[in-house]
Image (tube, rainbow, N blue to C red; front, side, top):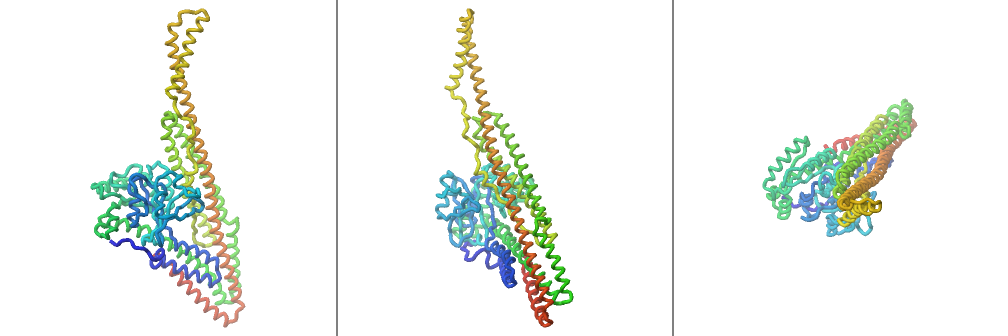
Length: 614
């Protein structure tokens, strides 16, 4: 086995689909500059930046203490993530390519802010500590730690994300991880060979598979558990019965690290990392780079089509001057239809506006329904026992329950937004023949850090001293009633029963006081739940509306820019066709040869773009 070497170039800069796509993008940018189309050049510049930094994210997830961080370290051949038997990962660690080893803090914000730190400082921010210990001097919350490594595996734009442990499917960590998975290119789920997959792990894998198309499972610690083959077979059977197509790859991070250290090929083969590395480099990174390259090539083809249409119209006027006016009239009619695409009355624009309005109402209703169900379940839990005994369990349950409903609501928003995007694209394409656009849905995971359950409520039971005082007070009232009052009224013979009756009344008083305080504690707990849910609903509702507005603006701006490009192409075509009529025969012949040459160049460029990615 060859130890990971430092990469000397950027992301796959010398070979592969990214290199091919970069070449055609550069040629297309040169053509746009030569043809005086800076608008199309701006479109290609975005594709060039995407090729330079593909950002292919592999999310590594799993329960606490299953070996996630050790696996990431063994995978990249460096101690990127801190490993400890007593502490756990508290914030995500992003391991990406860098020409030199380094580290950054990723701070909360829109967009997130990076603050350089030393590699030795990264550990204290990654491991589980108090939030105050992890906050930088600026006060912004730490959203993650970024580790930069000069590794060939990462040089193609791969980003390995080591997430905090799940702590069970019903944990807030699991909800945050699921949200990260929904934005990831692939998922590597980590479990160990100590036992077969648990129900919570299987549930998590099922949900992860719904959110991300590429998921595989790594079975760690095969060097420590001799029965790992039995566990692997059991895990495979469990996944097959669930109907989830996920491979189980047995690995040993310890053996892999030793193999890298001693450059031992046999030990590396025994570690099982050969299949895992193939999955990461080919399936994840390779497919991700191919997808980015194909998207960039499609942009080049779309630009070539607009430039080709522009020259084709001029060529028609040059070949047959008698039909030049007809060509201009046809182009004028087409431009009129294209100009209508930029108006608010365009069908795609109306579809977008109506769709966002309907989606906003549906998402708000879905969230309200989920929050109402959470409150109902919380009330049942509170009424079933004394909150003074169960609040320590109800509080984390409530946070995790709400966090998963937020993720479910966000998933609905994401899926419905994708459907709306495709519908708007179809309407725009039907009117203009343009290609589909893309959009992004923003992630509301940070909401969980903004609201917390209100814990400043009195849920203490009565102390023994308080219970004694309540009982004595009730007993004293009973004794007084059956001794002093009858004597004042001239009634005798009740003194012997005064003490037992007093004790009985004292016990009843104590029971009533306990019942009253229990009811008060339950009411306080219910109010705390409602305050928390109201805050979550208020913040989430605002975030959902903001997200939908961002989607609306992004789609609107995308298709408005496409309409502007089409209008500019048609405008130049009309001008070229009009000028063709005024040319002499000699000038027309010369210009025709030039136009044919340009059309041939554009055809070759479009063909080269079509061949990107195979």
